[in-house]
Length: 117
Image (tube, rainbow, N blue to C red):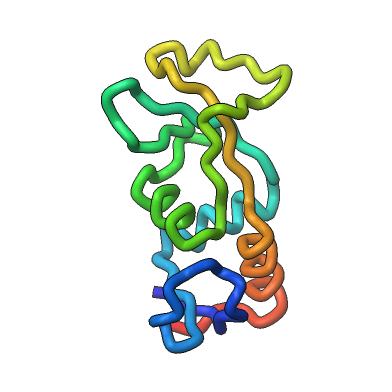
């Protein structure tokens, strides 16, 4: 697990003792969001699991965890303008996801300070 010092803006419960813990999968996704700020998002009608098929797909559990930690926003009612959702035909809910202010701060901290194992 990687950890970074918490600045109190993550929207978490405060029980982390000043640290934000990230799995390797979450850390990898944060780095992808640092490169591309918006990604398409979808989900099935019978599931809350986020789906992103871009760049070989993204780990749904890691996406959900980043959203729970307040680092990304999952907006199922805000699709990307001019994005072709044809590959997402099996998913009736189309939206987008992006870093939050806390996520941007986390990415900047990671770029400056790195991570602690």
